[in-house]
Length: 358
Image 1 (cartoon, rainbow, N blue to C red):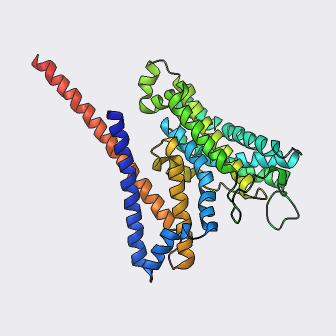
Image 2: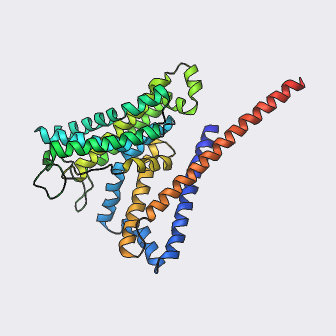
Image 3: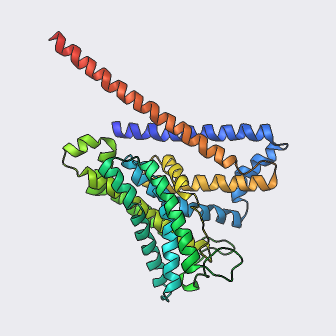
């Protein structure tokens, strides 16, 4: 009952934070726009006004699901790592190198490309994960610095191995058609990667809540000292959770490349790792709720894009919503932590008073 009550309050805190963010956005629209009603209408109904725009929502949702799942796994172990951003980038790079250098059959090419992308993404997380587990190095700082190394590595490979000199911009050779993911809806770019995303949601949910290793990850996140004394190998748990997150993010990069692009052309991280953190926060670190958080973030992004093209409101409004959500939810988590410590302190004082009275 207590667990259900806690889950309910966590969901309510996220819901209130989202409402507050949307309210602030509404106020900004009315203060800035000359036609606030039209701008608001474009923001709310724009993403569902045409098939193409609805497709844009689904297209934007797919990579957010993968990075949201990656963040969920790491957040469950209280690992605030940004390695999902670099793993997403290098996972796509590994897939591009594979499909460009090897002539693979139609079904095998995307399948092996996605698997390799996941493996490369997991490898990217080895160093940050080991430094955190071994020496308790700050995973946020280490992963952020390591992402810069991964960016330079990606540009090096792009320039020296797969670059198409005949293209008018810095990009790889054209990806073979037999490696591309099939388009599911005509007049859109909604591709078969949506099935891979939903499959990973199911697998990650089962892993986190139905397996011993998933339980160990959650236990280390709740109380690492208790987990260690109860026999859980905290080193391996802390080390592996970032590798698992990197693996999922690497798959996301592969799926995004094969589903949405004709060439590999990223010269920097596309930022989906940071967005995945927002999705994980919206999902309250529950993998099963990640598609909802990803859909919400994708919807408001498409909505702000439509609003920016039909009014004088810039599409940076989505950054305002995203920032306010993170601030409010973080504040809520901070206050709940203070409340938890106060409850423990109060319980200790009561226990002390009972001993003195007896």
